[in-house]
Length: 140
DNA sequence: GCCAACGTTGGC
DNA sequence: GCCAACGTTGGC
Image 1 (cartoon, rainbow, N blue to C red):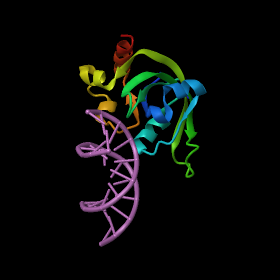
Image 2: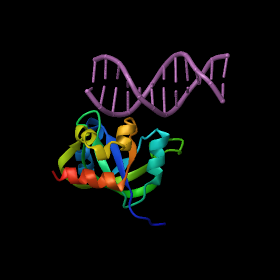
Image 3: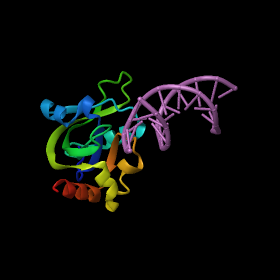
């Protein structure tokens, strides 16, 4: 396995389907069901040890915490054709202060986030700079 | 609940 | 290969 410095991601989930609390309750969750090529490419690029923001879409509209990639490069078990990717994640840290979409939009350093530019992409990349800014905001 | 944005599908 | 129609996502 090749190693590289950890990369950062943002994964969206609708909390009434699968929220942060569900992930904590399970201990480890499989991130599957993605049927978008760009999101799939992001999933396929993930490696164990990468970190991802957990974002609540539709309801909440905020980053609630951080999870780590525990298993990478698996085939989506819900996909019969075998061409879609999935990963497994574990909860790492719950934010004391969730970072809302409103706050992200109000922060100029986050204006170019893939989350903002492509609002419908369910798995997006986060730069180290963006990661640092959001983590600082989460500490209030 | 509505609708804009965007991705995908399918007819030609 | 184009593009209109359709379906889905996600902010509001």
